[in-house]
Amino acid sequence: MIAVARLNRRRLILSAMAITAFFCTVWTGVAARAEEPSRIVVIGGSLTEIVYALGEEDRLIARDSTSLFPDAARDLPDVGYIRQLSPEGVLSVNPDLILALEGFGPPEAASVISQAGIPVVVIPDGYDSSSILEKIRATAKALGREQAGELLATKVGADLTAAETAAAGIVDKRKVLFLLSVQGGRLMAAGDKTHADGIIALAGGINAMPGFHGYKEVSNEAVIEAAPDVILRMRGGRDPSSDAEVLAHPAIAATPAGKAGRVTGMDGLFILGYGPRTAEAARALGKSLYSDVAAPGN
Image (tube, rainbow, N blue to C red; front, side, top):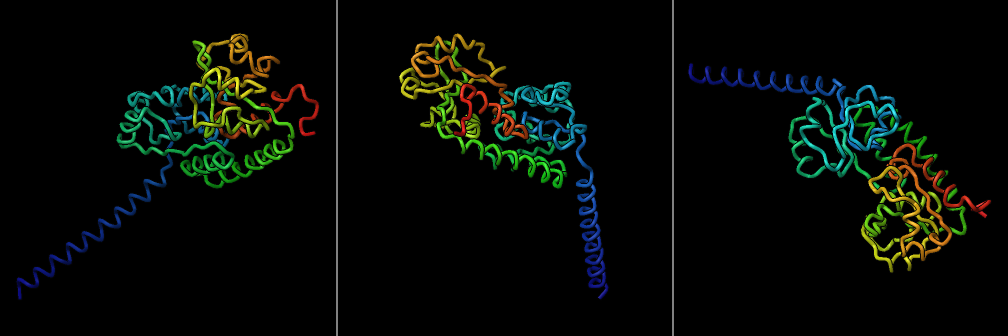
C-alpha cells in the first residue's frame, strides 16, 4: 500500500510538472510573438518599397543592392546582390528577421542563412498584377501590419486595374523587344514568364519574343523574324552598351524598331520591380511606346 501511494504521489508530481511546463511554454511562445522584429534585413528592391509604403522603414537595419528606392533606402548598409549574397554579410548586422524575395541566393547561401536560427520570411514573386498584391499582403503579414497591408493592396490594386483598362483600349498594339543585354553582339531577350513580359502587356504592348520562358540569348534571325516596333532596355543595368550601339546591331537595324530608331530605356527597378509603383511604371512605359501617336486608344 505504501509503495502504491508513493507511485501515485510521483505520478501527480510528474503531471503537475508537465502542466506547468506546458503553460510556461505557451506563455513564452506568446511573449516571443508579441515582440515585433525591430532589426530587419530586407532582400529585394520591391519588398523594400513595400516596407517604406507601409511606413515601417524604421525597423530596417540593412538592405540588398537592388533596394534603391526610395532614396532613403540607399543610406542603409548594403549586404550584397540578391542572387549573390554572402551569409556572413547578412548575418553580421545581427538581424532578428530576414525578409527575402523568392529566388534570393545563391542556394548555398540561402541554406546557411535559413539555418542560422534567425527567422527568414520568403515572399513569393510573380509576373502579373495579382502577384503584386499578394506580395504586399505577405510583406505586411510578416511585419504584423495586415490592416495597413490591405489598405495598400486596395490602393495599388485600383491603380493596376486602371492601367490594365487603359492598355486594353489600345487598338494597334506595338511589338516590344526587351533586351537585357547586347554585349559582344549577343542579344539577350525576355520571353514570357518574366517581369519584362508583364510590364510590356500592362503598358499596352505585345512581347515580340513570347516563344520561350525567362531570359535567353536569341539569334539574329529570330530577332529579324520577330520584327519588333520598339526596343526596350533597362537603364542602370550591367550592360554599358549605348542606344546607338543597339541600333547599329545588324539584326536590330533590320527591324521596324531599328529603321525608325525606336529605343526606349527605363530604370530597371521601376519597370521590373513589381512593387507599389508598377502601375505608374506601366503608364510611363506606355507613354514612351506610343509617344509619336496622338491618341493610342483610337
